[in-house]
Amino acid sequence: MWYRVKAGAQRLAVPVSLLLLAGCAVGPDYKKPAAPEIHDYTAQPLAPTTATAVPGGEAQRFALDSDIAGEWWSLFHSKPLNALIEQALAANPDLKAAQAALSVSRENVLAQRGVFLPAVSAGFTATRQLQPGTLAPVPSSNAFQYNLFTPQLSVSYSPDVFGLNRRGAESLEAQQQAVRFQMIAAYNTLTANVVVTAIQLASLEGQVEATREIIAADARLVEILEYQQTKGYASGLDVAAQKSQLAQANAQLPPLLKQRAQLQDLMAALTGHFPNQAPPEKFDLASLQLPQQVPLSLPSKLVEQRPDVLQAEANQHAASAQIGVAVANRLPNFELTGNIGNTALTLGELFTPGTGFWSLGAAVTQPIFQGGTLLHQERAARASYDQASQQYRSTVLAAFQNVADTLAALQQDAEGLKAAAAAADAAKTTLDLAQRQYQDGYAGYPALLNAEQSYQQSRIALIEAEASRFADTAALFQALGGGWWNRTELAGDEHGK
Image (cartoon, helix red, strand yellow):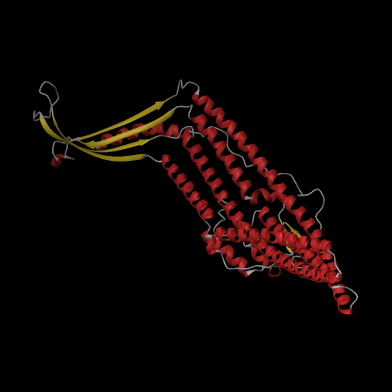
């Protein structure tokens, strides 16, 4: 029996080999899009951004074609910030969900690879049956009631003649890459959000402090004017106007406190905690250091670094492979099958001479009429590829816009910070003069309080300008890709290609 099986397999080997050799993957072979022939991000050349001697006021220079550190946030030189990011990377549920989605995609790819190998299954049946005497055949013992035991091994294999399985696997592998870059984008967004949230919290701490000092100054001025009113030196209109100003200052504090509380809740969520478990780290802008050498990737490299661009490219690749799947579904499908086993009336007779059986077969199926289904599925696959191509181009344009906007913001942040610092210096000079004049008796206490109030207002504007420069610097690192390729746990072979 085994000789006959071997001989039958040898007779089938020649045509099967010819089918495999003649096999080709139908549909277009994917070609990676060329990088845009763009040499600059902005219409005007970039100049070093300069400011003044305040937190975040250091001069920044763009280092063209410099690599981005995998832990770029460490350039702010804040240990509490580093600790928060480590907490977020370890416990953020959105990042964990993205990592789990990647595992799902990876397992789907491995599962698809099984179609390239023969499917082998084993079975065993045991029956007891009664055969009517009017029917034949019956066992050689002429018994009409008997047991039947049948162990069997079945093998089936579909040669991938037109590349249906190969294109399907190619599409799944591209989808896996898309999920991978989606996970990396979640990683970049998370780290940037933690940095920006910390900066905003530091800014609000300064604004709350300055606002409370303004309220205290206004309250003192109301007391002075009320006293002067009793002595006839101030009118009721002066008192009412100052009380209105105090009320306006008081009205500015609750929104700041609300925003600070919401940012603390956000920081808790980013680091995987409930609001009542918010991290205890406190920030002020003076504790942060502005990176002075800012790496700026070449435009040609941006499309190789941004995870959203790489995700869009992977989606385009998957759509291209689906065209091949749709084309192959319209072509013949081949299948080879084989069975071998034994049938006996008793378990003891199994595998004895004369109880074995085997079969080999080959089948081909050609779709003839499907009501236009397969044709329109192919057309839909080609349209999906066109859609993915345009989405890729849109993502590339948005990426360059994002970098250009951030560079423009940094340029203007530097100028805005310089102007805010000058205004704060002028207000401080006015306050110093008012204090000396008050001490020498040349100015009244209201003039001193007004000068102090103006100074605190200029402090708030300066704090906001400082925070904007820190935040936009973090945004630039994110816009350029975040340096994920320098993180061992994220970087694959050749960026995961």
